[in-house]
Image 1 (cartoon, one colour):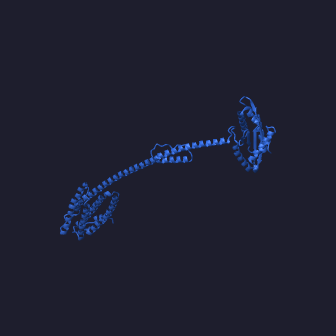
Image 2: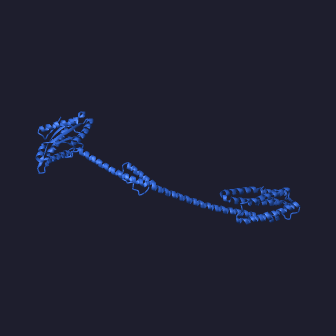
Image 3: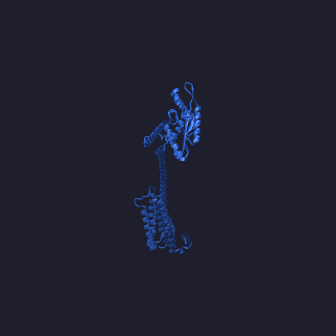
Length: 453
């Protein structure tokens, strides 16, 4: 049965039926719940102490105040049964009263431990507990206990006890409430402090993050980007690309020195490249001059020998026919004697131009020496070579040449043609055979084509 129901049942009995044992049983049932309540309160205060360590002492005092109130109530309840039955206190009840007074004194001492003074605004409340409960309240209990020991009748009943004893416990509840209020104030203060510290930490973290971001941006702009630009510049320079200047930085640090060094390297590389181009151009020009006849602009004998041997090598590998046309200008000496060497030079230049214009790409024409020229057609049989020689002869014979004095001069040429096929072909042999055919054409009256075949 629940304690509340037992109390109601006992109150419904007639006074004669309310025995001390029955009263004590009901009171014990009620106070059996006190440890459970105290344990629950202790659990909540421990949670609060872990959350706010600074208020731990205040909460402990509040818990002591709760226990103080419960033990004070228990002390009064011990007197309820004897007063209700008008019976003296038993030895057990005297012993229990002594135990409860000892526990109350212990709690009072713990609440007033050295170094744990209450806040100034709680001092009057604590003083009222000492004065009212530990003074008036305990004197009332002591008077009832003395009357019981002396065998005197009690001068009050349970109702009067409640009217006089219960108010003395009120300062204990006030002290408890004030302690809890103080703990709440301290917890709120700690909470606000924690909030401020949290905001300070958040703002500090944001400031640090912003500073790090700015630092990263500065490092990227001042170090990473220039290094990447320098890396790309080095790669371009390594690949021979000098189109972009790394930039002559105005920075007075190692990065600036590196960029300026790369810019200098680029400029030096451009100058070196230009010198190489000029050198190569000069080499090409010298090679061209070395391979070109200075008067006619066509190949000279040396260049013809080189090109002819290359053509001969390919013809030997492919077993093609290689032909050579050798010709010279008829009566060239008389032109020099009659019109001067300048006129002779004009004749050579004009004949070279006529032959060069008449040939296809890949066919070789060269001045072989004096008034003698040589032609090496490409992919040409012996018959086709003879036909080409005849066509060239006709072009030379038809080409008029106007002298400086206005006289029109016509010249002719005699041709010798030779060809060979396969590995037996040799350039010197072909030239020799063509030369023999050329002299045969001259003996037969000039201005004609003779074949070595």
